[in-house]
Length: 454
Image 1: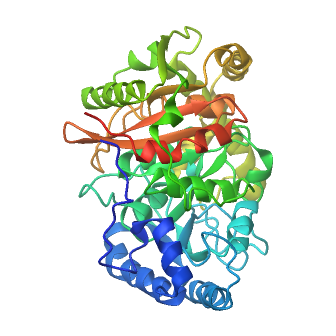
Image 2: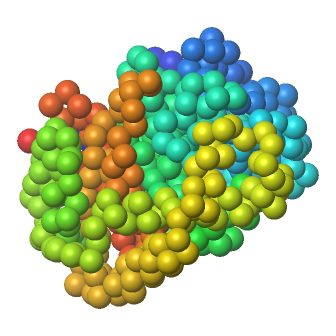
């Protein structure tokens, strides 16, 4: 039921899908060479990505330089950690010195930063091998990654379907097995929705200003960079690096289901009353039962002040208003190099009364004020990630696809996106903890990977 790639094939020693623990063991034993691994991944990208459009920039020269440096460290017995030599890619709104950072726009096609974003610098220090920069919805304002400049990104799992957005290239690159991990950015679900649609794991950290340094923003108060990977355990290792925490776990360790014992998990009635696909609700029930059998204390709660659709619309209005201010300062009016559709979205707040913007901001403030009481008697919230699975490109995007993800951004909370398969549907569930309790969520990784549904 829980989808995890830890069972990736051992027959291909250069397969980045087999998981960090086994890749690390092979690198340590000298049975795997970082340069050969990078070349194999670049080969996959060259052969498969013309149909997927997950990359905007492929940094072959940089990747091979990174891999050669990793090879030297492994041969001298001084690797930088469990991710030294592993292939990654970054969404193209995250600055990397010397590489283009387009934010998915024509306006920034030739923009080349001179410094790394904080997240990019931390991953570089961990010895990762950067394959390139990933496709995204234009300016991160949208959830299909049908990019008018750099191509329509495709979902590797379902022909002709969207990978979600705005970090669609990140979800597609992980699902296609191009990289061990990709980084996206999440403003109202833009890491977790691609994770849900592409059947991979995603993590949105607590709101931390330092993590946004060097990233082209949409809404500074909601934005968070986050990793995507093919298992919870792999994702937790990369998330700890991004959060500047020790990245040793879970190597050499095995979690068991005692992890769930006594964990107070609450499901939210308001989330389950949304128009959620029946197969996703069935998956929610099955996983709830599995964790309950393992000792979790699962309850239902009501949060009448959270109206998912109304809150999402308020958040979108705030994103459009803040996005307009940022892009006006960056490129001036009439927003040259942005598509007509994007420009119209950014200008929409100019047509609404100021009182409506004030109400939208107040709604977010009230949700944040409710957080201490909400988490006073529970540890985590459990709810669907998106209300529905991936849909075909060309079909109108469901207005409600971010209704349930936006909550974590509004309250500054960390959140998992956990993929599952139910009734032939690939869906996803969220676990949301109180702001600042990222370590609690990451500590569940091994147990999530071992969840068995009867």
